[in-house]
Length: 315
Ligand code: DGY
Image (cartoon, rainbow, N blue to C red; front, side, top):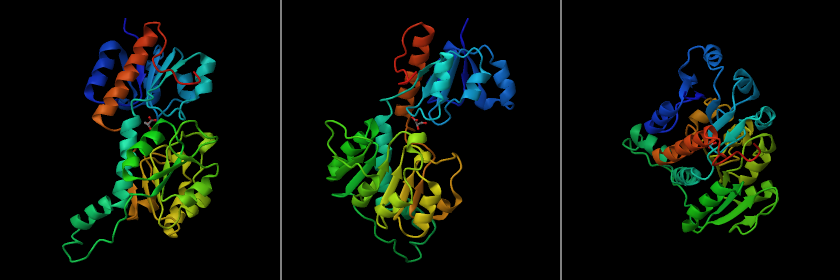
């Protein structure tokens, strides 16, 4: 008999859902009109497939009494209650590595889009402002600029590698210096922001990084500075971000993630110096296929009684 697996949202390109459908009896929670009823019907489910942003809290785990394994389609673990999973003996797998390049590409795209005013320029043409005789104000070049990284793990380092072709100087802030990295360590985040033209948020989410990007950091980044966030919305204090942009204390922001997705602070919607994307940094067919395959491989390993391919660090 196929093991039962709860899936919280549609995953990856169609072959991924097809493969899940073939191997497991699925409970498709995103299609359920009555979530509680769907969870009640999944009382024998041994597996749960979720995403980095949807995660799995203790209440969800409690609602699934037979749950033994969670397979996360993502690298972020902040939305999964790992202690609750551990207490229940639930195995947790995730998808590190396979999305590093896709997310890094997106960060570079956001930097170039913001600095070269791609989105603003597109609106300028579509809305007939250019045809009306106006000129878009000048952008700026990323070449030879200083880029600060809040978090310098796999993704931060990949972004720095890509940006090295532009001759940037890379700085990073982490709790402690890292070995063998081609970037300058800054123990003070505000100090690093002060030296940077662009500040890229690429650290993990969760309580240890909540609101690290606050008014002091944004003011230090300054009226010509660009904030890029491809990590987690929780790392940025959105009230401070809106206030800094409104006051002209911060130059621009390019944001793929938000504190309360899919809600976005209303004030940001009307700002020309802000680019907003809907949490799509890993959203290419290639990356989502690789992530989906790893989700499947972790499930398959678990149900075959083998070690997970990529177990979450503390599970
Ligand atoms: C991740 O990998 O955690 C991404 O943010 C997708 O949720």
